Image 1 (cartoon, rainbow, N blue to C red):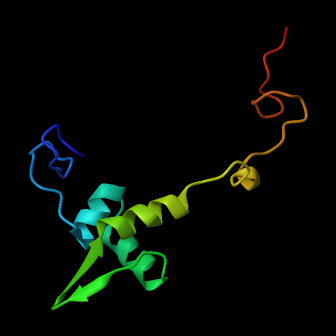
Image 2 (cartoon, helix red, strand yellow):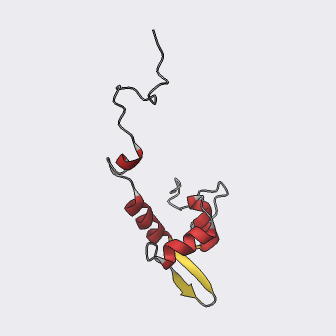
Image 3 (tube, one colour):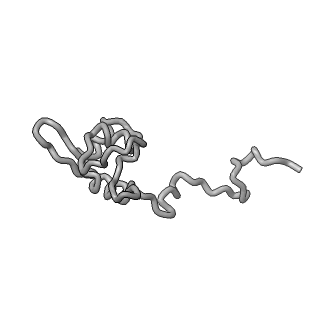
Length: 98
């Protein structure tokens, strides 16, 4: 987030500078997933990461690109949406009767 003074903060309400790099834990916290999920995204080649010494870091721009690539498009959930022949959202047999 960019503040009025032109500086950025990390969005945690502290006003601390937003770093260019995120730890795996910080990326997991931002996405509300486990660190294991982040490591899986990295291992699968879905999320770029860098080994710096003994730690792994993720660039904020790479995390943003990952999120943009993960955005759902219309129709992506078609396999989860069952067509209801009666035209309602209720499963057959649960419709209100008049």
